[in-house]
Image (spheres, rainbow, N blue to C red):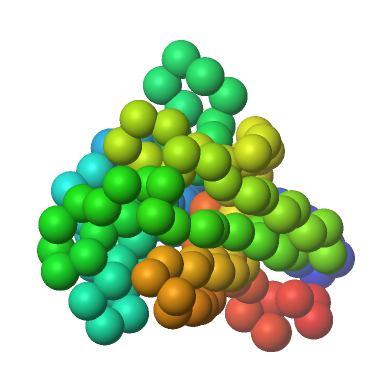
Length: 154
């Protein structure tokens, strides 16, 4: 096998190996992923805290296209979703930006649209409750892989 063919085979193998690897998702109970390295709320979503206020961000897809469900808490106790104004922005690797507004539904805030695949993005969450504004940013990467610089150069 020629050196060029060997390098191409190595790159192809690395790409295939990366396909089965998943980073933690917002709600592994809904997606089947392992426990991630961030704090979770009662609905198994990512818990974001600011003082005594917190929101739990999930992607729900049980019988529906993937959608955001966000639960709000004050002092560790659920609060009515009508007491919170929420916006989420997803910034994808290719530069696409998805913005979601939220409306109260049952005991959570429901996002205004479908969270399209891949579920791999930088997330910005903005919430207003009790006259206070809260902002969070985090990475939520699914199915991304890292290629060593040497391999990429080859």
